[in-house]
Each structure stands twice: as structure tokens, then as C-alpha cells.
Amino acid sequence: MEKWLSISELSELTKIPETTIRRYISKFRAYFRYDTRGRTKKYHPDTIMILKKIADLYNEDYQAPEIDDILGIQFPFAVEEKPTTHHPPLKTIEQQFEDFKTYQEQFNRQLLQELHQQREYIKNSIDKRDHDLLNAIQQMQDAKKEIAAAKEKKWWQFWR
Image (cartoon, rainbow, N blue to C red; front, top):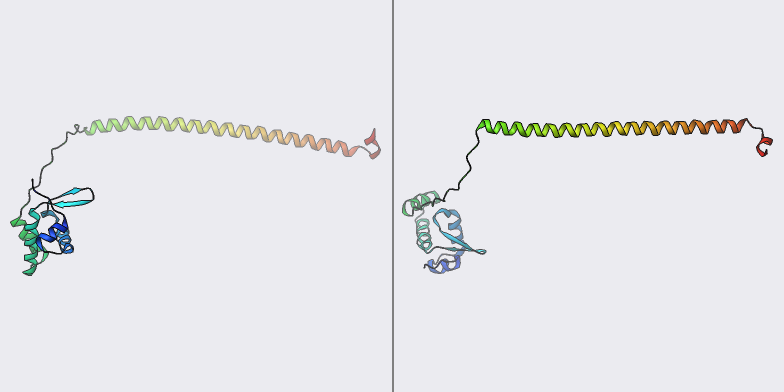
């Protein structure tokens, strides 16, 4: 089994500073195979050859897009196809419409029920308010009558 390498190990083997290696890996990410282990990444041993090639191309005054083209020719990479998962068959537009129609009817029924409940609550609240208001008015009128009756008595009649 091949030993996967950390960036510091790559730096020791290639004699390229770690910061430069990080920059190369960041710029040309597609050409490097790595495995995440915890918080660190380990790179495939092929990385050494690719890093040396990138360093040589930069020393020969190539620019990043040109290096990318050269790497694409010399180090082509294969994209692994992941197995497809089974998806349930898609519904037809008619089925989707029927589902939506059913949902809409349920929603409308629920909305009408809530509206009816609100109307009942408002009606009951208004009836209670009116009843309480009429009682308060009646009590005030009774109190006024008692006060008026009390004012009609002469002062000596209060002790009788």
C-alpha cells in the first residue's frame, strides 16, 4: 500500500516551501488526489511528480493558464462515476395537478372552518359586550334614580 503524504512531507521530498505547495494545490486542485483524515489531508505519492512539474513550469516563466493546459495533457485525470441511486418515477403533469387540486381543496376547507370559528367568536364577543354594556347602563340609571330620590327628601326626613 502506498504511503499518503502530508504537506510537510511533500515539502521535504520536493524541496518546495510548504506555502508554495499550498498555493499550487489551491490553484491546480483538480490534479491532486487527497484523502481527508480527521482535520488533515494526505496526498497521493503522485503529487510529488505533479508539484515538481508545476515548479519547473513556473521557473520557465509559464503562466497559470498555460500550466493548467500542460498539466491537462500530461496528467489527465479520470472522473469516477458514482452509482446512480434509484429515483421513484416522476409524476405526470396531470397527476401533479390532481395532487395540487386535492391539497387546495383541503386547504380551502380548513380556511373556511377557521373563518367560521372567527365569525362565531366575534359574534359572541359583540353579544357579550352589548349585554355587559346594557347592564352597566341599567345600573347607572338605577343609581341616578336613587340619588334623585335621596335629594328630594328634606334634611329632617333623613332621620326618620
